[in-house]
Image 1: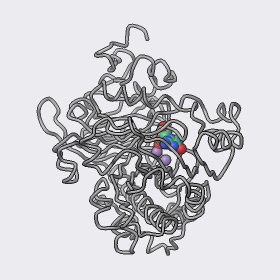
Image 2: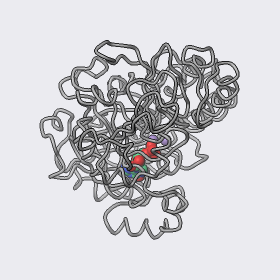
Image 3: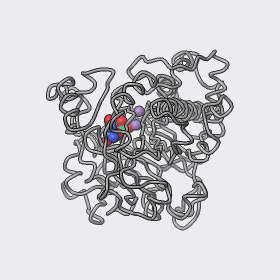
Length: 483
Ligand code: 5GP
Ligand code: MN
Ligand code: MN
């Protein structure tokens, strides 16, 4: 990688600020040599651009699943000084609070197998997927404003949640300080009908199995309610058109004020930002939190539907089927958190874009039951290869502001994938291998073939070697509703 890249440890690579004019701190990329070689060149340019942002502390980080994105790489982590730093929509992503939720059941693979197609078909009709999909929750604009102010609490009030679900969601499913008045009418109009919908492409609802031999930490797995041959459900979605519109609106605002009002020069207009403590920065933060809450409510409502589907297919209530949440965690956010800088605890604005929070054992933000183990981290692999449950570590707290990977990350563009794979053929092949997939679009399915993603085992291995998370269980896919 040239003499500007220094290998700090087996899996941590540092690019010196002398690499590029304007870098305030180094950039650090986490990964095995293989993963780093597989990253597109734009990742290095993007993460070093991020290192020029005002107020950035310690280093701009890229996780092992990193690939290039809008402004920031996907897999980017940037912690800003809350007083002197900036907030940047490109560091959060258009799909605000895109995240993963994992739900356990008492069912075994043998019990589910005979009913798998029926189950997946029902999930496919009950949890709408695809670009323009509309949900079953019909809301007036004023009710939608309640949803974005209250997140999962709104769901609890309206019969779409169990009380314990909230305790098992990051921020208890409702982040304080969301202000619906800071959100445009256009964003509200786009979001109104989207509660309870998956969205397209990379978003999914997967029925998975804990295979014997894929449990890496028995004690933790047991404490989290996991056992061999068990069926679990993992799903991935975000704030749909609502979050996208919020991000779009504020990117425009930031482009107008960034240089003219605040004299901030950036290397890439996709890194548009504003001082966090400026009126524009604060407004975006409040609006972005509405996106966080919308997404928590979306995943909560989807969970409600999943429970209904299982109850119908297996003729028992969701409670009787043991359909308890393991956890819900975001991977597109910026949050105020306290972390030590030069030995002193400071309030930082931590941007995570395609990166998962991974707090270590004993952190006050963790639910009581996970205190001894660390925060559950839910990571998708692909519809073919499997996914993981990890936990956060002390190492993540020290190195990456409590962050880790969020998936395997793409190896090829969607255009290239469509040339290489065919959705209908892929669906048949997967079926023959015991994975029943229903998708809103065959073209979309082709873009999501296993080889379009990096090797999830390699990514997780890199996270473990870097000390930023630990493996608990790997899940194998058997059914999937694809966006
Ligand atoms: P994102 O789209 O949020 O950047 O990435 C989510 C991650 O989920 C991807 O990096 C990929 O590894 C993973 N993923 C995408 N589609 C699927 C799927 O259908 N099933 C599973 N298990 N993982 C997926
Ligand atoms: Mn998303
Ligand atoms: Mn995502």
